[in-house]
Image (cartoon, rainbow, N blue to C red):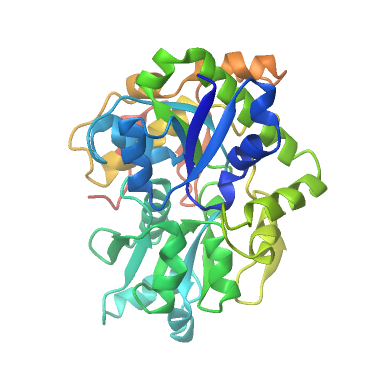
Amino acid sequence: KTSLKVGFIPLTDCASLVVAATQGFAGKYGLHITPSKEASWAGVRDKLNTGELDAAHVLYGMMYGAQLGLAGPQKDMAVLMGLNQNGQAITLSKQLREAGVTNGAQLAAHLKQGGKPLTFAQTFPTGTHAMWLYYWLGSLGINPLSDVKTITVPPPQMVANMRVGNMDGFCVGEPWGARAIFDRIGFTAVTTQQIWPDHPEKVLGTTRAFIEQHPNTARALIMAILDASRFIEASEANRRSTAKLISGKAYVNAPVQVIEPRFLAQYEDGLGNSWRDEHAMAFCKDGSVNFPYHSDGMWFLTQFKRWGLLKEQPDYAGLAAQVNQTTLYGEAASQLGLAVPESVLRSSTLIDGQRWDGSDPAGYAQSFAIHA
């Protein structure tokens, strides 16, 4: 199948898909990709299910939610590759700043005083942003299910909703954290790479039926987007030109001065602090960003269990082996001369000091003091 419709949400981390579709990388592998701008993650899920989209830039946790039937109808899904690591943020409102809240500890103290319940937004119930938000709140001793109210809002609508007072904080992908600062309605309380350095983020997702029917197409699609990912990181000039490309109305539809700095690892938080981020959004890093580690998928399952989305312990390793297409990815990466890790597990230490390596997912899921 040579002509593909691939969905995306207007976020900075759709960059490799847009570059692959528009800068000749798809054609190099015999494909024609039509990027399809979608309004919400629920819309992406529905169009993948019906086959209206062949594949999509999609939330990691959403793929596992769909596999388990937690996020709409059950559908066997396939994660072809990681599209990026890092590059999301939790934004708090200027009203909280005016109330003396500029960090997590102050937020926890503010909540203990009582008063009007705070409302936080994420982008999809089983998605990455919900999990980063819940994990951060949990690390502060705040139960996201009972101490605050959480709502679901599509990424491009976050800033407008905060502007009119519908929420006190939100977790979303860039450029919407930077946009809140640019518009002077909020500040960055924590970046997601501070919660988990080099965390998995968006993936290239499709249905199991698609890869069974079109394995060569799936492999070629991985190769095109891997090649585009490598191109973006090849030079600062490429990063700048990519930021300009995706800023257009057809894609992210945001000023390039909002997208480019964090794309180039140049951060400010809206509180007067600025830094060069060592764990800014990454698209390739010689393929280490893109390998669909089983442990990355399993982590989302541990959080689904933690927050009561799953009543029983799932078959962590079995589900990850079903969903994450490491063999297909390995074939594509090898064609491009990119190294493929020997292990499907990797280890990380998160903001609360908890180490995650995929070796005991059931024990990890039950190890948290704050849970459902």
